[in-house]
Length: 268
Length: 293
Image (cartoon, rainbow over all chains, first blue to last red):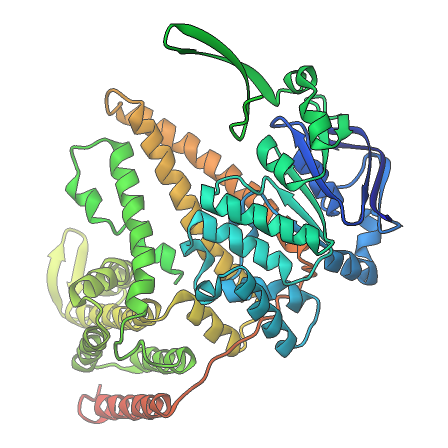
């Protein structure tokens, strides 16, 4: 396997001195499906943005596809084009990602930025819209769509660029159960197709179902565990310490029960 | 005019609910504005006269009519043009009552503001018709002000017809096809989306406040809360703007906004354009020959 991303001591601090990532060491191999899990505010979204070249290291370094991923490197048109073609980012808030006039324009935005010809752009839009079953939405304005439809369109808008790496921030957030199942099926298809996927989530169920590797971020913004979902989920004390599960007490009849409770309704 | 802006402050809920709390009245007004924005798309999809036209032809013809209206001097001809906007609205399944209210609420108000000084003897000398304290309203002043008011109302009417009978998405496509820079078109598209999104946020804030209030609160408290929330919405909209820009960068944005436009004009559009040119010529001829200055 070849490394798609290598982070060595990567640190990021926001303007007011708020640390978001603290000395992260992480290698993501081609074809891997990796879940970055952690409590709210642990730095998951910042890490994804760093992988997508939207925020940069204050300390340490990050490389993508063997090249240093820096602001200067992305200023270079050839590298920017290659990087943006290879890496797609599905934002947590679909509303943020859908900024075009119509769903069609939304799907065509990426390919047009890649300077593809009109016929190829139309072909890609039709192909992805068919695969994600959103053909009927193509003429609609994104702000008129439901939450589930917006998420599909947001994913489709990235897929038309045919990225080989997909970064997804809280992909199951705000999705109804049917759409969640659909999304997990899509992730399985991408796995079979050999695409690299990195998702940031605090939904342990979705993470365990869709990824073969789980990286845990602590509330101190550091990597505290990295292994298979089975390995990570068996470390009860660790999950309690990083605020991914909590003890939940309730009663059945006259008997009290205590469960470990996680987001995504997993009972350990 | 961005459709979302066209509906803000046009809520019957506000007029109906004078005894209700500020939070409830504002939330209802915003809810009504959002519904009307979505209703706009429904009206634009009806099989009416103007909905069936190519948006580019519609834009060209309406701009032509609005320009001609600004050259017309006679009040009867201007009244005929105002009537024409209403006829076109009716032929396009747009409620004439609601259309007229919207035109006169906005254009009427601003037209009156603009034309008010012209009513007075200071700006337009002539025989005095009415004296209001130090102000003397003259006959020629009344004619000038009425002409200005009718011109504004005619222009606003034609403009509103385009907005109401064209889906916002098609209107932007037409503007793009007619040479408006893609970046400007994209900004307009984002503005419409952001207004709807922020309206939803503000509506939820007002409802959340009402759900926790036991009384409607004093006017001072309400004003303070509204100001504080306005600051919050401004901060949030700036944060959203940053996020949207990140999302654009993530999909390869490098400063240009190319788009694919797929609009086709038909014979019907040609007939419409010819009829518009003929109507404009006729209006100008009648204005000059039948109602000379």
